Structures are given as structure tokens and as C-alpha cells.
Length: 113
Length: 112
Image 1 (cartoon, rainbow over the protein chains, first blue to last red):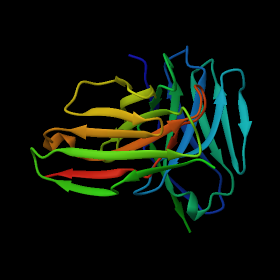
Image 2 (image 1 turned 120 degrees about the vertical axis):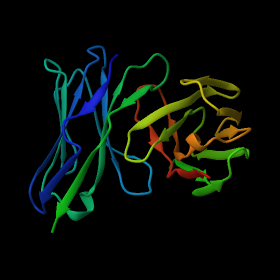
Image 3 (image 1 turned 45 degrees about the vertical axis):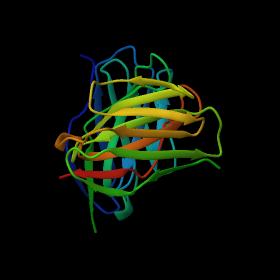
């Protein structure tokens, strides 16, 4: 069936470097995508979203890129900081009613000082 | 501003005991409400969603049920817990369709 997945389960980066977290989706009808950050013991926190009529969206230190041709989504974090260490989830919207997000399995980002 | 509260934060319950987890949202009206479960090191599985009082949709067959007695209150229940019900339960709200879900800080349930 349709699914959202992540290429790398764990990503380790040096503090100050840029991080790129990737996500593949298979539902070509999906039109809304979200990245969440989840710290240990907490609920997922919204980072940034993008709709299918865009291919790039920027926030504070984060950029989401959407390539609909290859059904690929990425989250770029500039100047990664120790506080960025967390699990990152992508999610796609295959809505029938409301916001029926399908979540990927998550990527753990580890920032080395 | 909108806030979402879940309680308790942690819970240890014996097999066969009942369960009631509560979630409330403040600062918004008519939210869509969701219950998710997250197994250790895994993604999120949608359990229930509600678009209004008394309106509950279930996404997966299971030992759990949900109720929405008030506009901003969502309750997850079980009559008899199973070991497999252990997990991290997350409540989320959405102001309108197609906007981001906002999650509470979850309840970690351990069934022993």
C-alpha cells in the first residue's frame, strides 16, 4: 500500500554542520507534507510544512524540499546545534476527512559537539 | 494561544484492568482531535479521530475505544488492558483540515 518512509534511521553530524534528513513517499496523490521533531519523552513538535504546489519552503534554519517527480521530501537544518538532536518524522496527508497523516518511521539525528 | 493537555504522563497498569486517558484542548473551538499510539522506536499509528462531539472514527480494530463528551475533550479507554496495549499514547488537535497537527506530550502506558 501507500507509505511514507525514511532512508536513514540514524544521522550523526558535527555541531555547526548542515544536516539533511530524507523521506520517500509513494502516494502520488498526497498534497501536504509535514516535518516533526520529537525529543525524548515528548510529543512530536511541528517544524515546517509544504504543499504540493511548492518545491521549497524555508523557515528559521530549516528548509524543506519537495521533489514530486521522484516522490522525495527532505529537511535541511543549517548550522546544526546540540538542541537539534531528536527524532525527525515526515508525514504525508492522504486525507479522506480531516488531517489523516501517514508518518514515516523516523530518523534519529545526533549532533556531536 | 492554543494548548493541549494530556494526563497522566506515565501509567503502569496490570493486565485486565481498565484504562482512561484524557486529553483537553484550550484556546480553540471545534478542533479535530486524534489519538495516536507510538511503539518504542517506531512511527505513529492513528487510532481514533473525531470531528465533533460524539463523532468517533476508528482506524484500526483494537482493544481500545474513544469518546468525545465535550468539544475540547477526548478520552481513550479500555475495559480490559492487554500487554500489547503498552506504548506511548499521543493526543493531537487540528484547527482545520489541511493544517498541521499539534501534539500533546503523551502518556507512557506500561501494561504489566
